Length: 256
Image 1 (cartoon, rainbow, N blue to C red):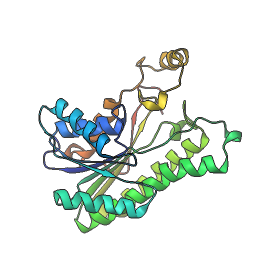
Image 2: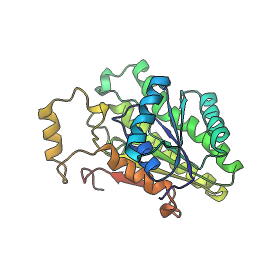
Image 3: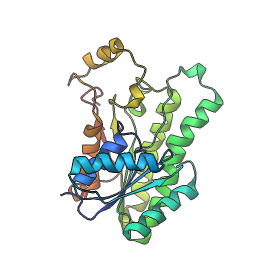
């Protein structure tokens, strides 16, 4: 049990098909106390998550659900306060919350740009600031931000330039936190997945999907649990001397 008694906040976890949910499920399997946050969180979504994780783990998980708009710093601070009130402290933040828009560069409007950057980059900033406040006060903590291979290769298979730019910003932001707050016991790392079988692929044709997969050395798309496994490693003490790094989870599609 790699996370026994660790309190972990996971954002962007409302969809049972998503990376955030897969991470919450895996963390519960490893005995973490899990705080699941999402903008769409309500009683029905919370009940679905609780039931699904309970079935997977085989017993009721130590789970707390919170509605949070990561575009609001006040919401992010309240998220940490709620988690600490429930479990006494927070040890780790896993930020999976994101939006994606597939657009050509010239078709991106100012509204499109603001929407994507406000969620993906400003949201990571707000969560990171709330996390660092809590972690410095408690003499340690751990941040894992999920970015994208789009930030590394210049554009994604699904997202446009604004998506890639926002995720590039997440990488730089995370490294900055790692450098500035390492002396305070705070670690911060990034995971860069490639094409993963989540709702972000809805609308992609089977032909296009197979075309992309055929160019991946491992000949398959990623699964949410593949990304969750990397999150587990970074959240656990196995990675105690790792900070400011980027872990690629891409099946070899981008080797650099």
